[in-house]
Image (cartoon, rainbow, N blue to C red; front, side):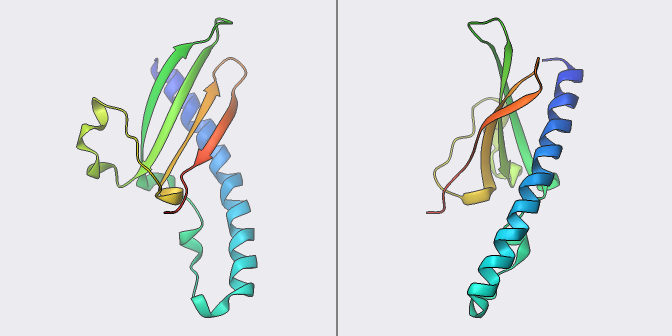
Length: 117
């Protein structure tokens, strides 16, 4: 992948996370009003990308399009092997999420966030 492609992915990722955090804040407000005794915190609902590591894996689809798998994970220092192997974890909630990007159309698809175990 080129440096320009990585920059494009980062721009699209940041745009997506802005919307994610808007939705997460709405969810927080709703949950906090329903369950005030739990002392919920907004930071537990939103994603701060500067705290996340990323992995990119590009493939060419059957249609000849470059599709990039992007895996994001908090506390990247915890994954010393991340430059050699794919980071895969079970559970972890918003600490681990992934998606794919079609670089030609600049569309993000198949976004998924890990469940909470």
